[in-house]
Image 1 (cartoon, rainbow, N blue to C red):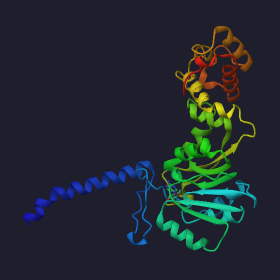
Image 2 (image 1 turned 90 degrees about the vertical axis):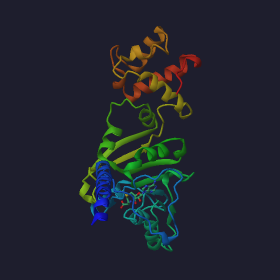
Image 3 (image 1 turned 135 degrees about the horizontal axis):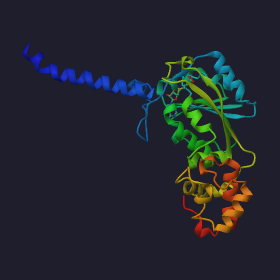
Image 4 (image 1 turned 45 degrees about the horizontal axis):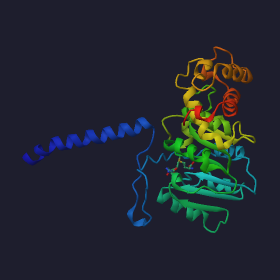
Length: 310
Ligand SMILES: C[S@@+](CC[C@H](N)C(=O)[O-])C[C@H]1O[C@@H](n2cnc3c(N)ncnc32)[C@H](O)[C@@H]1O
């Protein structure tokens, strides 16, 4: 009895800790990491710290059909399924595309995928972290219900220099993330850069009930298409980020003021006229065309030593 009494405070502390961890996972809307069976022999190897795995599997047949249809794939296409799970998208995608590359970190899911895809030359399964794999060099598309917890690293990889062969994609992301990525006004220089090269659109909302287990929030389909003609020269991408950061130090400031550190007064007048920017227009309300025009004016007329650093 005395022994039990002595252990009671530790037991209570343990229960509190479990509750706290559970609440934390609940707040993020993510499921805690699944435990791996040791005997599978394909132990998880992370080069970076493990993240929540976000295993919200899509189980709604019509939503799956719509996503596959909207990916507009042909038998000549290569498509990436990022976070393939048990293959709810992988196999329907293989019926449309020439080649599907399915990337998945979870050893148990990879085992299921390999068993289902055995002998199917159209499907290649990569057991690994998408953030660490090498992207195809030939043109490719993406159709995926991605792990929400790594939405930004996934976009950085696809829309940055590494993803130079990425053409277009339909990605299921958190609805809030889809809104942020597609609303017209933004104060995020990197998002502006992505928009110079890609068109991002929120295509449709997917109710949380279409996933198992359901996430805490609804999801949405984010459509991404590479622009045929980028709005700024690709080789000046890093410079564009430097320019946008400089301009967005105070997003509510009138563009004419924000341009001061870079352009002379005469250059400000001319470049604003060319970009059709009004005198009091705040920086954060500049349209993509205005951003591109002001930036190109800087490249053309301002001495490189005055260009803001990234
Ligand atoms: C939202 S689920 C989607 C699963 C499946 N595509 C579906 O729709 O049913 C995301 C999947 O990504 C996997 N995952 C999590 N982190 C990953 C990473 N860094 N690289 C690749 N896959 C990852 C999870 O194990 C999970 O199976």
